Length: 71
Image 1 (cartoon, rainbow, N blue to C red):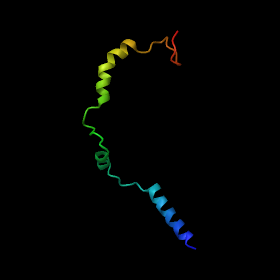
Image 2: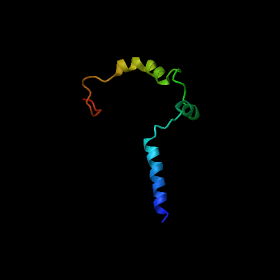
Image 3: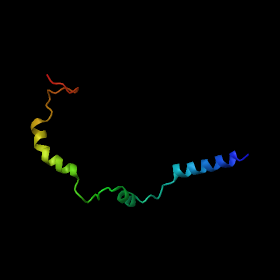
Image 4: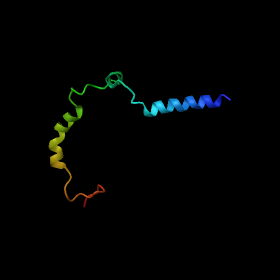
């Protein structure tokens, strides 16, 4: 007899989770996860600058095949 009430509550909770906009505090979540601020420089930018010359020099040529083999 109690199954209907329990199922109704589960359906209600599932709908709230699915359709609720959340109201999640993303800044707080970032700080808890230890994500650096977006104002800091991206470490990948440093690497891209460092190896940009190599990419130009050794980058793919028109002769390279799509499967990664050459010749």
